[in-house]
Length: 172
Image (cartoon, rainbow, N blue to C red):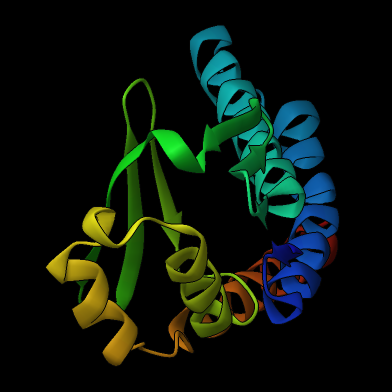
């Protein structure tokens, strides 16, 4: 069995649009605003961080096989062999849910922003040892919360960036 889970497509589209829309905003900030060097460095650091977080979200992927659970991100692939898993638990904070996987050497958090999150939970449960499944995971599996606020927040970011871009363009 090999199952691959990626970030929801509903989230990818607005993230890409927001990233593209932010280029003229950051460009105007760098060129036309006459900022002090310290503020320019801060803006540059924020811009780099924004792009890195976007790239990280676009690259995130969870692969579940009979032998391992692999979580890929910008920092590389974190592989957790199933035989080494000591605890799989779940955490819910409002509408944000996480699966926590603990092994002898590694820990991993998987948010509920992936496609078919309930299917991912079933796959994780099917490959894990019964004694490694925690009560929080069972409760999370029984009550998966759909995250509509992630998508709404991403589209709100796009709308704000469009407005800022128009203000910048028509200000001159």
